[in-house]
Length: 187
Image (tube, rainbow, N blue to C red; front, side):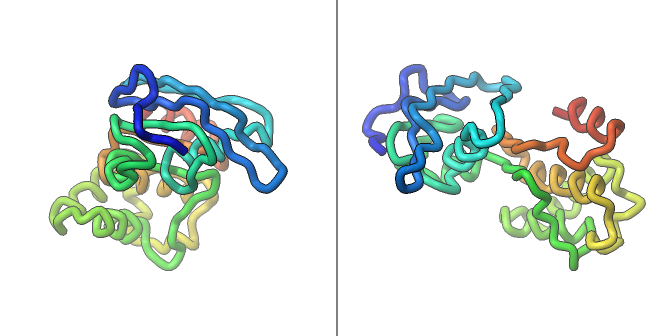
């Protein structure tokens, strides 16, 4: 992956040029180009196996591309991955909730990992519990949550750090119609 120059039109959004990824002989991305302006809701659609999750993993610095270059929030994936990570929130296909912790503790754990001070972490947790209609279960272990409640908590955890770019990989999986509508309204 060459990152000596930024993709044409690099901005605070997402810019990718020629992203390629293979696993052995299996090519999973073959020259993906993207230009997503800040403030845009952008959907990457395609059938299973089309490379959507791989694209998200590359753009969120979880894996590297074999070829191509990209910037996210104005930062090069290759030259400054820590800066990229400080600007993004990621919700994967499956909820990454710790079942041993309460809803509130899950949110406060993320705040601690993001180095928010204790008061700000508690404030953000309370705000997100209310926003995602989880205040009634804030003190309950997440292992007792339904799939939809776990998904809502997972989405809330993504927003703790107030990311400027959010990657949502199949965000409505497991949500009931009302929760799905609420989530899209928030986005």
